[in-house]
Image (cartoon, rainbow, N blue to C red):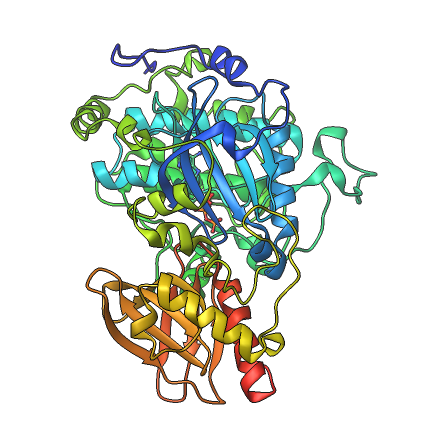
Length: 519
Ligand code: ATP
């Protein structure tokens, strides 16, 4: 079978597309060079937005990471690795391209190719499973991508359908290089009896990646080689054809047992040639895996009968599949993405952030919530709104006259004044409060007293307050999520703006002021 392109989508030979998309050397960009249209998804310490470059009108996915969260979680290495690997792969097809990076006071920005058609997992779920033709096609693209990784000494270590995005032509774009290992930076050992092409560093590593796709040697020897990605390839092929995970169980421990015992089975009538390929990739001994010992990687995979009718040079157009046509039709009916840029302005300031998290741009909240503070009454802001350094203001420094002056300002200008029993508001911001299934968005007001009130911003009704005792403490779970723990109840909160750490710090400062100790 030779994959033949269909005529639905404008096709460009893969290599040419890549050259056109290469980042051009240019002046350092800033967030103001882009219009941020909508949120595409959240990672553990980033949010990815669909954005349009003002100058070129080109669309990109911009991954925005919160610096303080990265530092607190000690994820600097993760970010550096991702950037380095993406830079190394910028000329190879089938990888998300890093167009440029930049940063401001609080955030890091990665400008990436926008994967218009979601990811392979979504496609598998939408179709139930992929037909042989489509699976063969995507496997070819994956093999070519893995060859590029091998040539560059990059082990992905987290290859799975969620990390295989799909571009506008439904070609793959491998992403998420945070778990990557770049071998060329490491001293090679054991190389006296190996040919140049077989040299691999052998180092013990901690487990990274995703349980269902992890190779047995990573569980036993903690040894990373390129063969880890070949094991994952076997799991992905299985999943494309069956719609199911190859190794699935109730806990990571049980999944690992299945992996170590090679415990997986095929549905009835499963293609023999496909199962033979999968079985040859899912081999316990890493160096016995198909392709692992190739002198020309991955010739032995390309030569497997699964690819008998493939003309490898033709790979790179639109994947051939009747089932994709249905997906394309459905997508066309979903409407125009361009709407999301309406009313949007360049940059990622308070106003734009408020729009992206679904708040009215006209409401007074939208100008206040971004740094979570009431302007001129703020308890804390190492950075003022115009970005200049500002000396941290301690509550203890507030004289009674200053408090009175601020209270009278608050009385005049804050619609929340009457709801906080006349206490001085030190900080306010919209948070999602989880109770039951649906989180409720509430205006949280941290005041002298100390108190934390929360108000329904739509109805302006005071919904309650978090009882403050000496035992109250704040636990940050994620750059957005944090818990306020009291003896009788834990309040599960989420700051849509991603300033959970700032909330923790501000609440702890107030606590320290009243109780003479950090919570
Ligand atoms: P983690 O960082 O925790 O491993 P992740 O890899 O999913 O999670 P991100 O890379 O930040 O985190 O991506 C978050 C989500 O944004 C993804 O799940 C995906 O839905 C979307 N996304 C990421 N990159 C792109 C892209 N280039 N084009 C379109 N959507 C993207």
